[in-house]
Length: 98
Length: 454
Picture 1 (tube, rainbow over the protein chains, first blue to last red):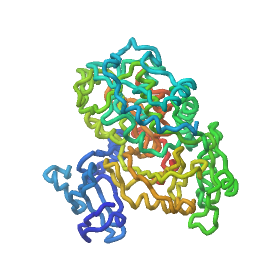
Picture 2: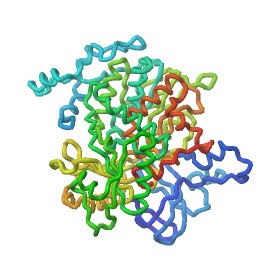
Picture 3: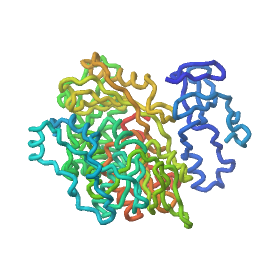
Picture 4: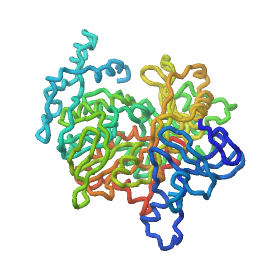
């Protein structure tokens, strides 16, 4: 079981949280003018990296707030947690945090 | 078939033969199936072996150095990849094939699953491919001349609430329309088929009935990988272990020209990636992203006991599936963790939830000790159906996304993927499972039909 540091509540066991999958996926600004392939990428295609992964978590049985986390998927080590809306701490200078 | 022990099989792969005996690369010319270096198993060889304690068993496939070029390369030496190589050689005459495996044969999900085999899927496309596989399972040991210990002991899927009853009955009707056996049992009929089942009305989730596929069952997972490896090797396929694919070479037209590996470059015009949970990292080396996420799926085995469980029992609702191996261990499948991971281990709370459900269904096993608990990395698609076929890169094919239920499909998956790689066009059974279904919207939604509550 992971020990996850909620930015609002501090370290708590994983069973208090729900994982919301990959973070920083931007919905196309103009969906009506997005082709099928691009829409499929937005809906379904995922980075799924073996290494540091940016993902969303919900502290469902705590403060009930969403936040982002960086976690190494090869080791399950939590690297960092950060506020929803903030860009990735390890790539902060890139637009959209990616 | 169930009584033959597999304990003798494991040492085989560790017995190193005299290197001087190693057979050279056969290439396209290849020897016939079961060539001179591989001995056929028969009643006579078994009896003769019994007199000498089976100490004379040889290595069952070569350990060749990679050649500089092949007609086709398969990335991933699990059951699906080895089956693909076997059917490429057997059905399509493509014998100049290398199977590149990062670790060792069958060391990934093939050696980590709970070996359940069934074909009672809801959607027509799924029913077609899993039934194709089940029919191949029925003749597999004979075709491979290797005992894969396929045992059609029946798969019992339990219903615990009115919704389960309706859902499983719908499966029964859909399966019958597709010519697949599946029948509805009352709780008493389920108990008659599986006597240890607890029918107490005091259960948190009482048993209200069950769907039974009598042709379903289990097989010996290691033997499947070894049997395919042995038979493919005999036809000239090179199985190269400890060989990781580091990148893909492309020709001027953008077509695949080969792979860069940890054991040097290999030229080829056809590459099939069959890497299960590691498909995303492998395909990223070709610059491709896929609609996949990789999760740990856990399983456990108990200490061995005398025969107690005559069939496979599954419950989607309380999330337990269990069978008894021929060695006597209870083989228990747990769930996936909620996060992407490649760590091949999951959180203990996932396994504990499953054990609680198992102990309620079968109180008599509650004091058994668990011997091992492990995880396998499963690649899950948004519709919980596999992706089999072409990719945007010409010459590069992919067979992935089998998620939590790939083992049962091993022969069918390899069979249709070999056709796809040999002809450059999808096999009719594999055609609906194309990558472009995520753009066209023709998804094959098995999320509610799979064994695991996703």
